[in-house]
Length: 91
Length: 344
Image 1 (cartoon, chains in turn red, blue):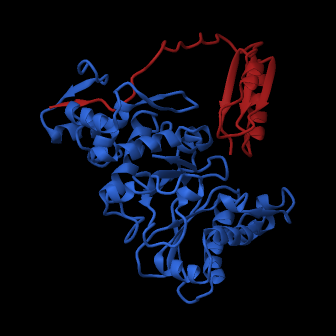
Image 2: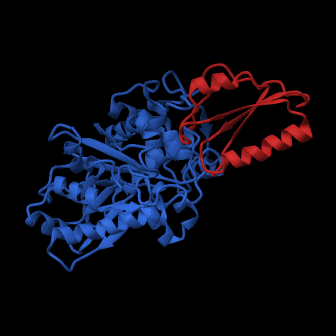
Protein backbone atom coordinates (compact mmCIF):
# COMPACT_ATOMS: atom_id res chain seq x y z
CA UNK A 1 0.00 0.00 0.00
CA UNK A 2 1.28 3.47 -0.91
CA UNK A 3 0.32 6.34 1.39
CA UNK A 4 1.04 10.04 1.09
CA UNK A 5 3.04 12.05 3.58
CA UNK A 6 0.70 14.53 5.31
CA UNK A 7 3.39 17.07 6.18
CA UNK A 8 4.26 20.27 4.37
CA UNK A 9 7.40 20.00 2.30
CA UNK A 10 9.93 22.83 2.66
CA UNK A 11 9.60 25.59 0.07
CA UNK A 12 12.14 28.21 -0.94
CA UNK A 13 15.74 28.68 0.11
CA UNK A 14 16.89 26.94 3.27
CA UNK A 15 17.41 29.31 6.18
CA UNK A 16 20.96 29.82 7.39
CA UNK A 17 22.00 30.08 11.01
CA UNK A 18 23.92 33.22 11.89
CA UNK A 19 27.50 32.69 12.99
CA UNK A 20 27.64 32.32 16.79
CA UNK A 21 29.17 35.15 18.82
CA UNK A 22 32.55 34.14 20.21
CA UNK A 23 32.11 36.46 23.19
CA UNK A 24 29.50 38.78 24.66
CA UNK A 25 32.18 41.13 25.92
CA UNK A 26 31.41 44.57 24.51
CA UNK A 27 28.41 43.29 22.58
CA UNK A 28 25.10 45.01 21.96
CA UNK A 29 22.16 42.79 22.95
CA UNK A 30 18.53 43.30 21.94
CA UNK A 31 15.80 42.27 24.37
CA UNK A 32 12.38 41.78 22.79
CA UNK A 33 9.60 41.87 25.39
CA UNK A 34 6.39 39.97 24.55
CA UNK A 35 4.39 42.58 26.53
CA UNK A 36 3.03 40.24 29.17
CA UNK A 37 3.11 40.97 32.89
CA UNK A 38 6.47 39.96 34.29
CA UNK A 39 8.66 40.16 31.20
CA UNK A 40 9.95 43.59 32.15
CA UNK A 41 11.21 42.49 35.55
CA UNK A 42 12.60 39.28 34.08
CA UNK A 43 14.62 41.28 31.56
CA UNK A 44 15.92 43.58 34.33
CA UNK A 45 17.54 40.49 35.86
CA UNK A 46 18.80 39.22 32.50
CA UNK A 47 20.28 42.62 31.71
CA UNK A 48 22.04 42.72 35.07
CA UNK A 49 23.54 39.26 34.57
CA UNK A 50 24.64 39.93 31.01
CA UNK A 51 26.20 43.27 31.95
CA UNK A 52 28.01 42.24 35.13
CA UNK A 53 29.03 38.66 34.32
CA UNK A 54 29.40 38.68 30.55
CA UNK A 55 30.47 42.27 29.81
CA UNK A 56 27.61 43.21 27.50
CA UNK A 57 28.06 46.88 26.65
CA UNK A 58 24.64 48.04 25.52
CA UNK A 59 21.03 46.88 25.42
CA UNK A 60 18.22 47.70 23.00
CA UNK A 61 14.94 46.93 24.75
CA UNK A 62 11.71 46.90 22.78
CA UNK A 63 8.20 45.80 23.70
CA UNK A 64 5.77 44.10 21.32
CA UNK A 65 2.36 45.77 21.17
CA UNK A 66 0.60 42.39 21.19
CA UNK A 67 1.92 39.19 22.72
CA UNK A 68 -0.02 37.01 20.29
CA UNK A 69 1.17 38.59 17.08
CA UNK A 70 4.59 39.01 15.48
CA UNK A 71 6.72 42.05 16.32
CA UNK A 72 6.11 44.90 13.84
CA UNK A 73 8.82 45.24 11.20
CA UNK A 74 9.74 48.71 12.54
CA UNK A 75 10.52 47.12 15.93
CA UNK A 76 12.62 44.44 14.28
CA UNK A 77 14.44 47.17 12.37
CA UNK A 78 15.30 48.93 15.62
CA UNK A 79 16.68 45.67 17.00
CA UNK A 80 18.73 44.94 13.91
CA UNK A 81 21.69 46.90 15.25
CA UNK A 82 22.21 44.33 18.00
CA UNK A 83 24.85 41.59 17.89
CA UNK A 84 22.37 39.18 19.49
CA UNK A 85 18.68 39.32 20.35
CA UNK A 86 16.70 37.56 23.07
CA UNK A 87 13.00 37.01 22.49
CA UNK A 88 11.44 35.87 25.73
CA UNK A 89 7.99 35.02 26.97
CA UNK A 90 7.05 36.43 30.33
CA UNK A 91 3.72 36.02 32.07
CA UNK B 1 7.45 11.39 -5.82
CA UNK B 2 4.03 9.99 -6.33
CA UNK B 3 3.35 10.64 -9.99
CA UNK B 4 2.70 13.46 -12.36
CA UNK B 5 0.24 15.39 -10.25
CA UNK B 6 0.53 14.61 -6.55
CA UNK B 7 3.53 16.22 -4.87
CA UNK B 8 3.75 14.46 -1.53
CA UNK B 9 6.39 11.91 -0.63
CA UNK B 10 5.05 8.35 -0.84
CA UNK B 11 5.56 5.78 1.92
CA UNK B 12 5.20 2.06 1.22
CA UNK B 13 3.48 0.07 3.95
CA UNK B 14 2.11 -3.48 4.14
CA UNK B 15 -1.51 -2.62 4.85
CA UNK B 16 -3.87 -0.16 6.53
CA UNK B 17 -2.84 -1.33 9.98
CA UNK B 18 0.80 -0.61 9.22
CA UNK B 19 -0.11 2.73 7.66
CA UNK B 20 -1.72 3.78 10.93
CA UNK B 21 1.28 2.50 12.86
CA UNK B 22 3.58 4.62 10.67
CA UNK B 23 1.50 7.74 11.22
CA UNK B 24 1.22 7.10 14.96
CA UNK B 25 4.95 6.48 15.28
CA UNK B 26 5.79 9.72 13.47
CA UNK B 27 3.26 11.89 15.31
CA UNK B 28 1.29 12.57 12.13
CA UNK B 29 -2.08 12.18 13.81
CA UNK B 30 -4.02 13.46 16.82
CA UNK B 31 -3.55 10.13 18.59
CA UNK B 32 -6.62 8.51 17.07
CA UNK B 33 -6.31 6.08 14.15
CA UNK B 34 -6.33 7.42 10.62
CA UNK B 35 -7.68 6.29 7.27
CA UNK B 36 -4.58 5.72 5.10
CA UNK B 37 -4.31 8.58 2.57
CA UNK B 38 -3.66 6.59 -0.58
CA UNK B 39 -3.07 8.30 -3.89
CA UNK B 40 -6.42 7.12 -5.25
CA UNK B 41 -8.38 8.41 -2.26
CA UNK B 42 -6.60 11.77 -2.25
CA UNK B 43 -7.15 12.21 -5.99
CA UNK B 44 -10.82 11.38 -5.48
CA UNK B 45 -11.18 13.99 -2.76
CA UNK B 46 -9.45 16.60 -4.93
CA UNK B 47 -11.76 15.77 -7.82
CA UNK B 48 -14.77 16.19 -5.54
CA UNK B 49 -13.54 19.67 -4.67
CA UNK B 50 -12.60 20.49 -8.27
CA UNK B 51 -9.03 21.30 -7.28
CA UNK B 52 -5.54 20.54 -8.52
CA UNK B 53 -3.05 19.20 -5.95
CA UNK B 54 -0.89 22.33 -6.03
CA UNK B 55 -3.74 24.82 -5.70
CA UNK B 56 -3.28 27.08 -2.69
CA UNK B 57 -6.17 26.89 -0.25
CA UNK B 58 -4.71 29.32 2.25
CA UNK B 59 -1.51 30.80 3.62
CA UNK B 60 -1.03 31.00 7.37
CA UNK B 61 -0.17 34.70 7.66
CA UNK B 62 2.53 34.64 10.36
CA UNK B 63 4.84 31.79 9.34
CA UNK B 64 3.62 32.05 5.72
CA UNK B 65 3.04 28.34 5.36
CA UNK B 66 1.16 27.58 2.18
CA UNK B 67 -1.63 25.04 2.60
CA UNK B 68 -2.18 23.20 -0.68
CA UNK B 69 -5.31 21.39 -1.78
CA UNK B 70 -3.34 18.14 -1.75
CA UNK B 71 -2.50 18.49 1.96
CA UNK B 72 -6.10 19.42 2.77
CA UNK B 73 -7.32 16.34 0.91
CA UNK B 74 -4.79 14.13 2.71
CA UNK B 75 -5.99 15.45 6.08
CA UNK B 76 -9.64 14.98 5.13
CA UNK B 77 -9.01 11.37 4.09
CA UNK B 78 -7.04 10.70 7.27
CA UNK B 79 -9.80 12.23 9.42
CA UNK B 80 -12.40 9.88 7.95
CA UNK B 81 -14.28 12.38 5.78
CA UNK B 82 -16.30 11.53 2.69
CA UNK B 83 -15.26 13.37 -0.50
CA UNK B 84 -18.39 15.52 -0.40
CA UNK B 85 -17.24 17.08 2.89
CA UNK B 86 -14.36 18.78 1.08
CA UNK B 87 -16.09 22.12 0.36
CA UNK B 88 -16.72 22.58 4.09
CA UNK B 89 -13.14 21.70 5.00
CA UNK B 90 -11.83 24.06 2.30
CA UNK B 91 -13.98 26.94 3.58
CA UNK B 92 -12.77 26.23 7.09
CA UNK B 93 -9.10 26.36 6.10
CA UNK B 94 -9.64 29.61 4.23
CA UNK B 95 -11.44 31.13 7.23
CA UNK B 96 -8.72 30.33 9.77
CA UNK B 97 -6.10 31.82 7.43
CA UNK B 98 -7.79 35.22 7.69
CA UNK B 99 -5.43 37.50 9.69
CA UNK B 100 -8.23 38.44 12.12
CA UNK B 101 -8.47 34.80 13.20
CA UNK B 102 -4.90 34.90 14.48
CA UNK B 103 -4.30 31.19 13.90
CA UNK B 104 -0.65 31.29 14.91
CA UNK B 105 -1.34 32.99 18.23
CA UNK B 106 -4.28 30.85 19.23
CA UNK B 107 -2.43 27.67 18.22
CA UNK B 108 0.80 28.51 20.03
CA UNK B 109 -0.78 30.02 23.16
CA UNK B 110 -0.63 28.40 26.57
CA UNK B 111 -4.36 29.21 26.66
CA UNK B 112 -5.02 26.20 24.44
CA UNK B 113 -8.02 26.98 22.26
CA UNK B 114 -9.76 24.92 19.60
CA UNK B 115 -11.59 26.06 16.46
CA UNK B 116 -15.32 25.90 17.24
CA UNK B 117 -17.15 25.49 13.93
CA UNK B 118 -20.81 26.13 13.18
CA UNK B 119 -22.17 25.05 9.80
CA UNK B 120 -25.22 26.74 8.27
CA UNK B 121 -27.26 26.29 5.12
CA UNK B 122 -28.37 23.37 2.96
CA UNK B 123 -25.02 21.60 3.03
CA UNK B 124 -25.76 20.56 6.63
CA UNK B 125 -28.62 18.39 5.43
CA UNK B 126 -26.76 17.19 2.33
CA UNK B 127 -23.98 15.89 4.56
CA UNK B 128 -26.31 14.61 7.27
CA UNK B 129 -24.81 16.82 9.97
CA UNK B 130 -26.12 16.78 13.51
CA UNK B 131 -27.70 19.81 15.16
CA UNK B 132 -29.76 18.09 17.85
CA UNK B 133 -29.14 15.23 20.30
CA UNK B 134 -25.62 15.25 21.82
CA UNK B 135 -24.66 18.03 19.42
CA UNK B 136 -21.49 18.96 21.30
CA UNK B 137 -20.55 15.30 21.65
CA UNK B 138 -19.89 12.19 19.62
CA UNK B 139 -21.95 10.32 17.06
CA UNK B 140 -22.05 12.13 13.72
CA UNK B 141 -19.49 11.40 11.04
CA UNK B 142 -19.55 14.77 9.29
CA UNK B 143 -19.45 16.80 12.51
CA UNK B 144 -16.59 14.67 13.84
CA UNK B 145 -14.41 14.40 10.76
CA UNK B 146 -14.76 17.93 9.37
CA UNK B 147 -13.53 19.34 12.67
CA UNK B 148 -10.83 16.71 12.91
CA UNK B 149 -9.53 17.54 9.42
CA UNK B 150 -8.59 21.04 10.54
CA UNK B 151 -6.75 19.69 13.57
CA UNK B 152 -4.72 17.33 11.37
CA UNK B 153 -3.82 20.23 9.07
CA UNK B 154 -2.72 22.32 12.06
CA UNK B 155 -0.55 19.44 13.26
CA UNK B 156 0.96 18.25 9.99
CA UNK B 157 1.03 21.31 7.74
CA UNK B 158 1.39 24.15 10.24
CA UNK B 159 3.51 22.33 12.81
CA UNK B 160 1.02 22.81 15.65
CA UNK B 161 2.46 19.86 17.51
CA UNK B 162 1.84 19.72 21.27
CA UNK B 163 4.96 20.69 23.17
CA UNK B 164 6.51 22.25 20.10
CA UNK B 165 4.62 25.06 18.36
CA UNK B 166 1.44 24.21 20.29
CA UNK B 167 2.36 25.31 23.84
CA UNK B 168 -1.08 24.72 25.38
CA UNK B 169 -0.93 24.15 29.11
CA UNK B 170 -4.06 22.00 28.99
CA UNK B 171 -5.77 22.19 25.62
CA UNK B 172 -9.27 20.71 25.78
CA UNK B 173 -11.31 17.89 24.23
CA UNK B 174 -12.51 20.20 21.44
CA UNK B 175 -9.02 20.03 20.00
CA UNK B 176 -9.90 16.60 18.60
CA UNK B 177 -12.96 18.04 16.88
CA UNK B 178 -15.46 20.81 17.72
CA UNK B 179 -17.92 21.18 14.86
CA UNK B 180 -21.70 21.41 14.89
CA UNK B 181 -24.57 22.32 12.61
CA UNK B 182 -27.23 24.86 13.53
CA UNK B 183 -30.76 23.51 13.90
CA UNK B 184 -32.28 25.86 11.33
CA UNK B 185 -35.35 23.69 10.66
CA UNK B 186 -36.48 23.70 14.27
CA UNK B 187 -35.60 27.27 15.15
CA UNK B 188 -37.63 30.44 14.62
CA UNK B 189 -34.47 32.49 14.53
CA UNK B 190 -32.27 33.80 11.73
CA UNK B 191 -29.34 31.41 11.06
CA UNK B 192 -25.98 32.51 12.45
CA UNK B 193 -24.31 32.89 9.05
CA UNK B 194 -27.18 35.01 7.72
CA UNK B 195 -26.92 37.29 10.74
CA UNK B 196 -23.25 37.65 9.88
CA UNK B 197 -23.84 38.68 6.28
CA UNK B 198 -24.18 35.48 4.26
CA UNK B 199 -27.07 35.33 1.82
CA UNK B 200 -30.12 33.41 3.14
CA UNK B 201 -30.20 29.92 1.67
CA UNK B 202 -26.42 29.77 1.12
CA UNK B 203 -24.16 27.39 3.01
CA UNK B 204 -21.45 28.80 5.26
CA UNK B 205 -19.19 28.12 8.18
CA UNK B 206 -18.41 30.26 11.19
CA UNK B 207 -15.28 29.52 13.20
CA UNK B 208 -14.21 30.84 16.60
CA UNK B 209 -11.00 30.14 18.51
CA UNK B 210 -12.67 28.86 21.63
CA UNK B 211 -12.20 27.50 25.09
CA UNK B 212 -14.30 24.46 26.06
CA UNK B 213 -18.08 24.77 26.30
CA UNK B 214 -19.58 25.34 29.73
CA UNK B 215 -23.11 24.02 30.16
CA UNK B 216 -25.86 25.95 31.90
CA UNK B 217 -29.28 24.74 33.02
CA UNK B 218 -32.43 26.61 33.93
CA UNK B 219 -35.81 24.99 33.42
CA UNK B 220 -37.69 26.76 36.19
CA UNK B 221 -38.87 29.92 34.51
CA UNK B 222 -40.72 31.18 31.46
CA UNK B 223 -39.06 34.60 31.60
CA UNK B 224 -36.40 34.97 28.89
CA UNK B 225 -34.50 37.39 31.10
CA UNK B 226 -34.13 34.80 33.82
CA UNK B 227 -32.97 32.15 31.37
CA UNK B 228 -30.42 34.51 29.86
CA UNK B 229 -29.31 35.63 33.30
CA UNK B 230 -28.07 32.07 33.84
CA UNK B 231 -25.94 32.37 30.69
CA UNK B 232 -24.72 35.79 31.84
CA UNK B 233 -23.68 34.32 35.19
CA UNK B 234 -21.63 31.64 33.44
CA UNK B 235 -19.99 34.27 31.22
CA UNK B 236 -19.22 36.47 34.23
CA UNK B 237 -17.68 33.49 36.00
CA UNK B 238 -15.50 32.88 32.95
CA UNK B 239 -14.47 36.54 32.90
CA UNK B 240 -13.39 36.43 36.52
CA UNK B 241 -11.87 32.97 36.73
CA UNK B 242 -10.40 32.70 33.22
CA UNK B 243 -10.16 35.82 31.06
CA UNK B 244 -11.77 39.22 31.61
CA UNK B 245 -11.21 40.49 28.07
CA UNK B 246 -14.09 41.17 25.70
CA UNK B 247 -14.47 39.28 22.44
CA UNK B 248 -16.67 36.82 20.60
CA UNK B 249 -18.58 34.52 22.93
CA UNK B 250 -20.93 31.90 21.51
CA UNK B 251 -24.08 30.67 23.22
CA UNK B 252 -25.70 27.44 22.09
CA UNK B 253 -29.37 27.29 23.03
CA UNK B 254 -31.36 24.04 22.95
CA UNK B 255 -34.97 23.74 21.91
CA UNK B 256 -36.67 23.86 25.30
CA UNK B 257 -35.20 27.24 26.15
CA UNK B 258 -35.54 28.47 22.55
CA UNK B 259 -39.28 27.91 22.74
CA UNK B 260 -39.59 29.92 25.93
CA UNK B 261 -37.40 32.74 24.70
CA UNK B 262 -39.11 32.99 21.32
CA UNK B 263 -42.60 32.73 22.86
CA UNK B 264 -41.80 36.01 24.61
CA UNK B 265 -41.13 37.53 21.21
CA UNK B 266 -37.34 37.50 21.62
CA UNK B 267 -35.03 36.73 18.73
CA UNK B 268 -31.26 36.62 18.48
CA UNK B 269 -30.97 40.39 18.50
CA UNK B 270 -32.73 40.66 21.86
CA UNK B 271 -30.54 37.86 23.24
CA UNK B 272 -27.40 39.64 22.15
CA UNK B 273 -28.53 42.94 23.59
CA UNK B 274 -29.53 41.38 26.92
CA UNK B 275 -26.23 39.57 27.33
CA UNK B 276 -24.23 42.62 26.27
CA UNK B 277 -25.82 44.54 29.15
CA UNK B 278 -25.75 41.77 31.73
CA UNK B 279 -22.45 39.96 31.12
CA UNK B 280 -20.11 42.46 32.70
CA UNK B 281 -17.93 42.63 35.78
CA UNK B 282 -15.74 45.17 37.54
CA UNK B 283 -12.04 44.71 37.86
CA UNK B 284 -12.47 44.81 41.63
CA UNK B 285 -14.52 41.60 41.51
CA UNK B 286 -11.25 39.80 40.86
CA UNK B 287 -10.87 40.07 44.64
CA UNK B 288 -13.77 37.63 45.08
CA UNK B 289 -12.04 34.88 43.11
CA UNK B 290 -8.58 34.94 44.61
CA UNK B 291 -7.06 37.50 42.24
CA UNK B 292 -6.64 40.37 44.71
CA UNK B 293 -2.96 40.65 43.76
CA UNK B 294 -3.78 42.14 40.37
CA UNK B 295 -7.18 43.72 41.05
CA UNK B 296 -5.64 46.85 42.56
CA UNK B 297 -3.10 47.52 39.86
CA UNK B 298 -5.61 49.66 38.00
CA UNK B 299 -8.99 51.26 38.64
CA UNK B 300 -11.10 48.65 40.41
CA UNK B 301 -14.35 50.37 39.46
CA UNK B 302 -13.68 49.87 35.78
CA UNK B 303 -16.46 47.89 34.14
CA UNK B 304 -15.48 45.12 31.73
CA UNK B 305 -18.08 43.85 29.28
CA UNK B 306 -17.86 40.31 27.91
CA UNK B 307 -18.72 41.63 24.45
CA UNK B 308 -17.33 44.72 22.74
CA UNK B 309 -20.82 45.22 21.32
CA UNK B 310 -23.96 43.04 21.06
CA UNK B 311 -22.75 41.91 17.63
CA UNK B 312 -19.84 40.06 19.25
CA UNK B 313 -22.22 37.36 20.49
CA UNK B 314 -22.72 34.30 18.29
CA UNK B 315 -26.16 32.85 19.05
CA UNK B 316 -26.59 29.28 17.82
CA UNK B 317 -29.76 27.17 17.89
CA UNK B 318 -28.68 23.58 18.52
CA UNK B 319 -29.09 20.74 20.98
CA UNK B 320 -31.52 17.94 21.76
CA UNK B 321 -35.25 18.58 22.06
CA UNK B 322 -35.57 17.90 25.79
CA UNK B 323 -33.91 19.64 28.72
CA UNK B 324 -33.52 23.21 29.82
CA UNK B 325 -29.90 23.33 28.80
CA UNK B 326 -27.59 25.64 26.95
CA UNK B 327 -23.89 26.24 26.61
CA UNK B 328 -21.55 29.18 26.62
CA UNK B 329 -18.43 28.87 24.46
CA UNK B 330 -15.85 31.43 25.58
CA UNK B 331 -13.24 32.99 23.33
CA UNK B 332 -9.60 32.02 23.57
CA UNK B 333 -8.30 35.48 24.56
CA UNK B 334 -10.66 38.42 24.20
CA UNK B 335 -10.62 39.96 20.74
CA UNK B 336 -7.13 38.74 19.82
CA UNK B 337 -8.87 36.18 17.62
CA UNK B 338 -12.14 37.10 15.95
CA UNK B 339 -14.85 34.78 14.68
CA UNK B 340 -14.81 34.39 10.91
CA UNK B 341 -17.85 33.55 8.77
CA UNK B 342 -17.31 32.36 5.24
CA UNK B 343 -19.66 31.14 2.53
CA UNK B 344 -19.01 27.63 1.24
